[in-house]
Image (cartoon, rainbow, N blue to C red):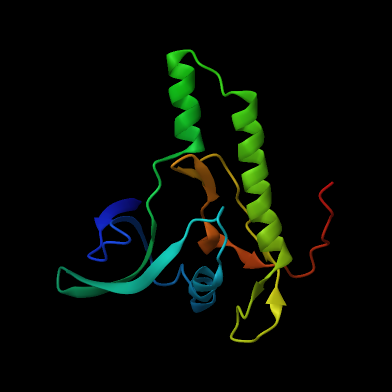
Length: 159
């Protein structure tokens, strides 16, 4: 589940927080989120461990904080359908261009994922309309926390 939170830093304002079980989010994934920097990928703001007590037992959860989207592409498509409207061809092309730009960036590699200086290609693994988010008209890909380094995957050229 995603929560809307407020951040004291005025340059950020509202943000989105996602809570994970501690075993679900590795240090490598958090490191990846810190290093990803592309206009079409949701910006990582921070990470912390949340401690809560339930029936005397202490539970720990990882929380990642990302920029807050206006809506997902899926929600926009449903809204348009419900109003009897269609996605304009120019908008469809722009969304395709933006998600392609994000994927090319990830496949091209992110430096220093495991503390080294080498470039590590990343595969997202689950691109859906719910993971394509809109920020003031700009499409950004989310879900980088489930991404993995490309190992043994043949790269293909996008023509």
